[in-house]
Image (cartoon, rainbow, N blue to C red; front, side, top):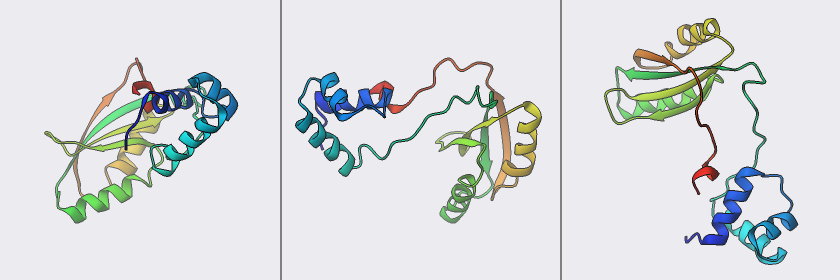
Length: 153
């Protein structure tokens, strides 16, 4: 599938304001309403746009403690990875989870209200996930840049 400059404009614009009307979107990207709507439907049907959601400010919700956790597994066969992946999806404090090629197996981004809440999540949830051998925590002091995919399109 080829993404041209109008598709990129659609993605960039919706990345900043997913609630924009089709009329406003068309005006923003410089096309009329019908071709804009057709492009949007194509991007959705081809799976480039996978959905729309509301984004929340975690700081205003009291979730300003962020920690990154390196996780090493004692078993990295496919069944163990699958069990770990499934369990990770059930922990709401895990905001992101990435399998890593390097000295550890996964990097998790954990968001909680406080250090004590994080310690509880680490002890009661992360450390008890299937096949976890060890963890290392790095606490974020400040978010310099956070964003959505639209920031790079």
